[in-house]
Image 1: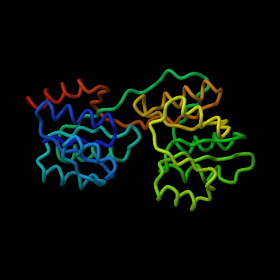
Image 2 (image 1 turned 90 degrees about the vertical axis):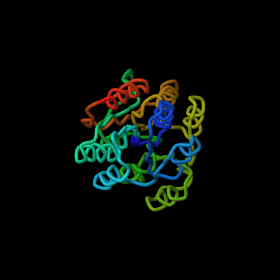
Image 3 (image 1 turned 180 degrees about the vertical axis):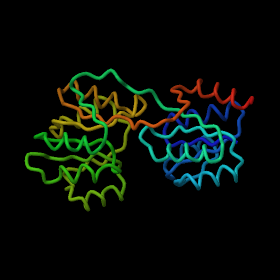
Length: 255
């Protein structure tokens, strides 16, 4: 049995391909919403977070012989837990991660953390749009909400808990953009123009994560970008396309 840590559209594609190759698998996601696309593809899914020790128990219970970590590039905790569980249970581990985009120009300021991004934004006068999701919102709100000369916009999924979080952090309704992607370049441009954005904050989630559309839209409008780079984790075996992962699975399963 193969455990596929999923939750993204490309992880779904990978799980479907593994299934097509005739391997037994079970996928693991954090939310019910992420599970929907997998159940629609008739793939077995477990929902909820797994700490490393819980994952070890899950591996034993379900006789997992291989972990394929296809979690989001910024799901650092999930990957670290999977690596630790693999080591504790002596289970082979493969990391699938969408390709990183490196060809950005001078309009992009790269930073190593959300805290650094918030510091950079706090030195900017104008309209700052955050597009990194609600999980990181407190870090930016602490620095930017109420800051003189800055209008802070939070773009996030239209969920009740997100709106409640904005209220707790003092973000006014007029500064909340509750919308679900994917976003085309033209839609990004329209939003930037509508709100008069002068700085956009994003993270390097890769092409599948629609970063290109955000960046190209900002570039065409001359809007500076703060980009948070991916966490650096010692994954070991890392592959960036589905055929490579399938080939590696075949090699492991022959052993």
